[in-house]
Image (cartoon, rainbow, N blue to C red; front, side):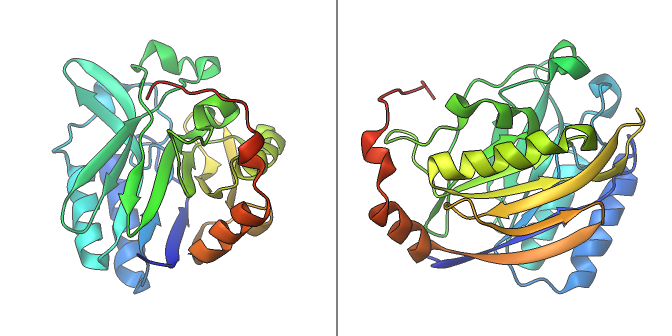
Length: 261
């Protein structure tokens, strides 16, 4: 396994409802960066912004955005992930897609749709949490509004992981909630948490401050950045994670509760 896992965050402004412009932007960033990393993490709906027009801007799992992700994964010899609008069997999903260098795909459909933005009127809800096994690490992917629901993110014997990956289009006006809840989810689950948010003003004139976070299981914030576009790579250490869980085994006193996955 990789005792040190390198994760690269892409906190970026997004072109509103312009798939090819966003693909070109991320391609330029990835191709020019000379990245040596294990995982590249893009924001929620990285190809469009948080659009409520899936009938116009959705793609299939064979579309240009996922084809680009596959190419980036091969070029960087790293997993690439982020969410995008997917059309499947007459339904639309806000789907977290994970692509490995060999082309293997794994996905998670957003479990909590943001009703204050009427997301539930345009998208179908996902019902299953997943665990991604990658380089000896167990990774739990989530999307934006999921962050508010601690039971959904709860680490347990049946749903055990080492790292939460959260991608988002979280607005600046609720940045306090974002900062507080990302830290809380890391602490209560004794897990690393990497949260990647966008910056800039979207087509609905909603401003996003980014505030992407990398947080240790202890709750210590090892990286955060507000307002600026940034590409940042950090290393997570597996021994530090297991040692902390061993020295402070709060999970042994947890309430027994399991969700069906």
